Length: 266
Image (cartoon, rainbow, N blue to C red; front, side, top):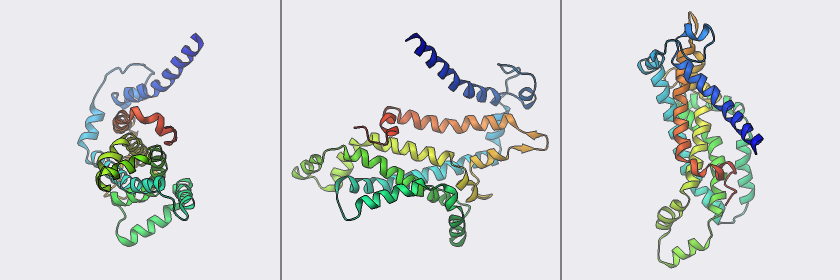
């Protein structure tokens, strides 16, 4: 027991140290960062955060990232919820094959779709817009969302549907007022996975965006000035990019165990 406790403490320290060092770098100047090693900042400063807040390149990039993440999450949930309900409640010709085909889309690496997406969006005028990145991410988040939600929905007894019908409730009333509230944990977990994939994905976001819709993950890879890498500003941006993820995790924290089991834990 004592040995396990020390192992757990060592693991927590291992996880916390990078976060602490990131926050420490965010309140240091570049001279302090590249100077002598010190656990605590010699002269703490908020200049790095001020640079991000005042520089349109940074705050517009944050806005672009949030825009396509929100669009992707909304579209993914809007498509996946009815699809998952259909897979969990009905049996039709080719249902298993279609369900497996959805998963094969998730198995393909994003690089495979770079050229088709680039040419298609350039042809129809969607290139360099948040919608382009959001739709590209949907190719991966929609199958994952259907897979997670179908597991949760299947765990809800079908007798509930029949009881609602016997009580005289219409299907829209049952679906939106009874069924979805029961599965709000499933929706929260699915939202978490959609957000995390879209927020941290770099390859598609970098290829399908230009000067007008450049996301934060792309700006962070270009933090180089004439004097070299701007470590302090990059660390401050890293701290700010962690915050949305922390908020989402806090929102679905009570349901993550089922989520990491892909909805297969009832």
